[in-house]
Image (tube, rainbow over all chains, first blue to last red; front, side, top):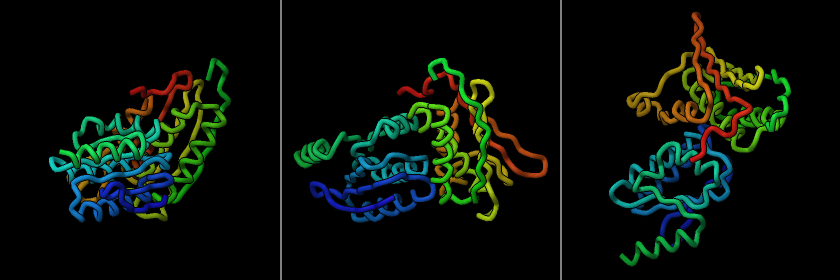
Length: 117
Length: 143
């Protein structure tokens, strides 16, 4: 799995590529920790190039969501159908601090709305 | 499976009790799925469930030198993966999750994605998790 931290619309963006499982999910959580320690109340995770995730990866996302609760949200970009099914199963979609965007333009639109508040 | 009789499967792999081996386990599940012409969703669900069972086994297997055995076999129209180790399955609990960093989502996912999940403890130690799907059914989850 490749992990890169960049920026989209001034918001920290974690770009992931490959399979995320219990063997490497700590890398995702560590990256999220660093991004959140910077104080951002919004965080994006691009899953466009992630084909597989188990509960290790989901747990890493929950870590980020917990830290942003009542402050902001964690948005994932481009999860495939399988990942979306897992997110539904574990109740992520019901969490107000979790957002899903089809692609980066959709995420940028949401960021623009946040900036306009 | 479109009504066609499933080929008989009886295969196994042995891997180290190490989460770095989960990719190898997933490839094994994919190979079995291809032999049975399972659809993509069913294979994905099996990969997650078997991976979760292996990850739990790694947590309590007592060291990477301890092997995990992953078997796949068909009985009629039922496909069963078994994950066997020499430790004891530990159900998730919040205090243990905090201490060991275990997500606690593995067991609920296994139960949600499979048609049947059972656990067996051998008297002398060791746990076997059985994960079964019925091959004439479609994917078990349609959110």
